[in-house]
Length: 312
Image 1 (cartoon, rainbow, N blue to C red):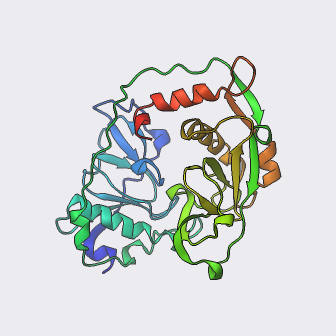
Image 2: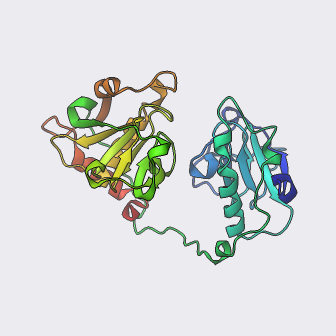
Image 3: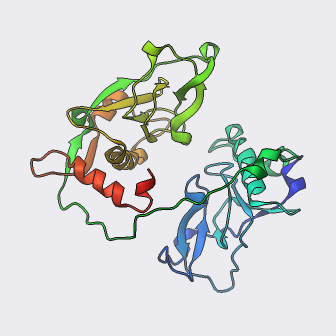
C-alpha cells in the first residue's frame, strides 16, 4: 500500500521560524513550531499564534521531505509547520499505537534519501504495510514520569578551556565488513545520528569487545554525533572511542560532556572529517573546579537535577 492510499498527504504551511515570535515553552497560548528535524518530535520552538494562520490540528503525522528526510512523528498538539514538511492525515481511524507504527515504517525509508536527494516528489509513493500487526495495539505506551521538580539550576561561575586529548584516552574504532558480520547480541556502532549509534547487533569474540562507560564520537558519516555507551560494543572505524583519563566517568557527567562535544559539530562535515588528531586538539569549554581541573562533580549534579534526570 502506498502512503497516499492510507493518508491524505499535504504540504505544510511553510513558515519561516525567523519570522515568528518566540514564546516560553510553558506558554499555554503558544503554538508548537515543527520543522525538518529528527529530534524532540520535530518541535524546534514554541511561538505566538499568527493572525490569519490556523495551526494544523493535533493527531496528524508530520514527515520531513528534506533536512532529516523521513523523520516522522505524531503531533499531539496543534502546530505550525516549517518548510519541506508534509502533513499526513489518516483516511481512516487509527489508534495512537497504529500511528506510531506507521511513523516507524516511514522512517525506515530514510536510507533511500540524503540532503541532496529529498523525498518531496516520492513521499506519496513509499510503500507501507496495509495490515497492522496484532502486537502494535497490544503494546502499552507508558508516560515518562519524574520526581524532579522544576528548579533554577545555578550555572557554574567559572568555565575553562580543556583540550580533549588531555582529558580523554582515545581508541580508534575498527573496520568490520558486512560479509564478516554475524547476527548476535553485541551492539555494533556505526556513524549514524540515532539509536545511540547502534546500527545492529552482531557476534563478537570476547577479546574484541570494547568496554563500556565511555563516549563515542563519529568522525565520519554523521560527523560529531556523540553518545554515552553503557553496554559493551564494537565500534566501526568511522567512530572514535573516548575513555576518561585521570578522572572517573559516569553516565551523568558523560551526558553533560556529550552535549558540549556535539556543540562542535558545526565545525565539521562529511567533507571535513573530525579526524582523531583534530579531535584530540579540539578545545571543550567546561565548568572549572577550584584546583583548575574540570568540575565533573558539578556536571553530574547538574544532569541529575534536570527534569527527568532521575530517569536516566
